[in-house]
Structure formats: C-alpha cells, structure tokens
Length: 190
Image: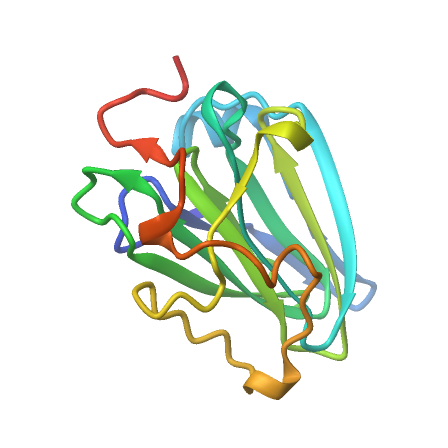
C-alpha cells in the first residue's frame, strides 16, 4: 500500500497494491496492522455503503464532539469526487479542502480524520461508495456545512443544474455560521 500525503496534514490518499492477471485482479482493501503503521492507529467500528446516481452530492457532513468520526472511503463501482474540509477552528488550514477522484479503476482510498467535514459528488452514471467509520452514527450529533460555501470554494465538477441534493443537504449553514465545529488544539482521539 502506498500512502500519498496531501496539502493538509493527516488527510491521506491510499493506493493499494493491485495484482492483476488474465482472471482479473486481487487487492487487500484493508489491513488494520498496515493502516496503524502507515497512517495512524484507528479502530473502525462500522462499515457503510451507499449507491447514488450521477449528480448526487452528499455533504458536507460531520459528527460533533465525542461522536466525531474518522472515515476511510472508497468507490467499488463508478467515479466520485471526494472532499474533506478542515473545520478545526484555529487550524492553519481552517476552511481549506482536499479533493480526490476515487474510481473503481484506480482503487484509491481516502482517509479523513476527525475534525473534518466530508462530502462527495457522483461523476459517473452510478456509484457505489463504501466507507469505514471509527465511531457509530449518532443522528442527534450530526453537523454539516454548505456544500456550495464560496469561502471554501469546492469545484464539485458538476454544473449547478446537475447537482442533486437531499432536502437536508440543501439547507446547511455556511462555515462561518456553523455552530459546534472542532477546536484545533483538542485531541478528538483521546
């Protein structure tokens, strides 16, 4: 597995070793030991999967306080643009984002640590998206920021008329107005 650092420390892209032949391919999608050694010690407790059609945009989501989540995300069918936004007040990269294209062909995975909002847009006709979380889903501790916040400036690679949102995702506050973000000086893994 190759670990690719990004412009924001802690957020990494993972490229697995893919072994292919005339039959197809094999890859190790996750190894706790290798992940702990190469990225950071994280104990994932929940796996999720979503299926979405072209233009669906989900995000930018996070969970608050002790329910904060790290995520390890990947695409098993299709193509998405996956995005992590630093929402740690006081961070030197507060409000900045990292975007990576995840596809069934490149087999890349994206690690988003606690303290970041997460979202993705579907760029293929359909996408199946899988992710591991290190804390269970807590609906009463959900938080989010607006996907189209001009201060964040994400290019989702979709025209405005192509974007498909849930009612909830169409009504999130701008980052500057979001309550209960994270504090850069707090260790949310403690």
